[in-house]
Image (cartoon, rainbow, N blue to C red; front, side, top):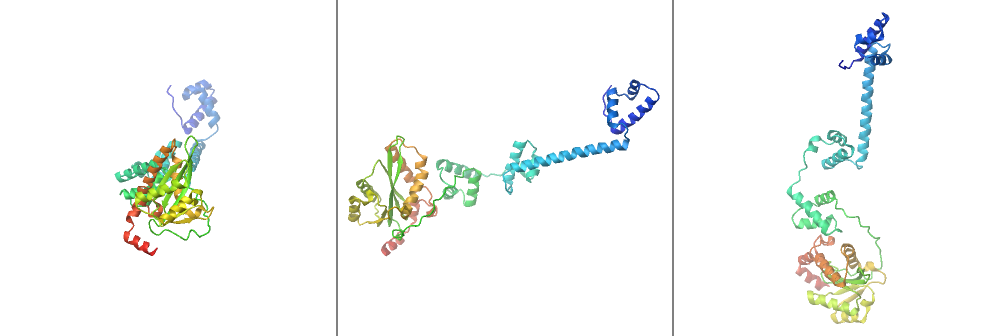
Length: 378
């Protein structure tokens, strides 16, 4: 006998007919055979619908459907709440953020695209349409990734200066957005507390190239644990790194030799030179060199490195972008790599205080006429 499903009304009608047959002394087997049902179905129907009318059965069926619908609504609402909690806090304002949110919900919760779009407020048409990425933006993204790989300690501002000089982008907001979307943000650098010291050596500020050179020493080690001392010399006006010379130990005679080499190579000589009170700077050899060349030695106060702020800032960049990223095996390797970084710093790296120009480019833009006028006034 083929199995068929009965509605509550049909079940009640059959129960009423079967009860009449039982009242006429028919056996339960004859009643079930007449109704074309099994005895198990008869007893189950008796326990569920016994004594009910057709209207009661219909009302019960409607209540069951309503109960199932409410349970489904509650489950869907709970799932929507869980999906919203999974997303990052904040409003999903841009279509691209909503597109990524829909993909995340589909992957983590296994819901349909329609459901995820309804939760995030994304249009399904926008979701299905692939984002328009032109060749210029694709090239810009690739260039930003290349810059980040080559210079891991750079931020988006220096990357924007390079891309702008190459004609890839004009708006800095676009570079910042793509830099963030590519996940290239470097850790935020914690700035040290600004220290205020005496102004005796801070009153002289460079106003043209080669007016004030600043020098300082910096220490690092090779893999064998031996010390390496770097002599850093910077032009305070152009921010040009004149020397990043590496020594195992540096004497006053070696310091004078580096200064003579810079003057002979560049053909330029400073008017003043700013330095601290280290033994190499206060030695007789350095004092004699300043007297013979006519360079004024401007010493900062003892224990006041903030008075040599330009060179200290350069030391920070040198440490962050070079020393912290390299491993040195020998003094020769240190000198070669340091000289290569110095050339890149002067000719390629954008400098924030120079309008994101490299120091060499900034010097080339400096007007010789204005330089002579400033020199005469000095």
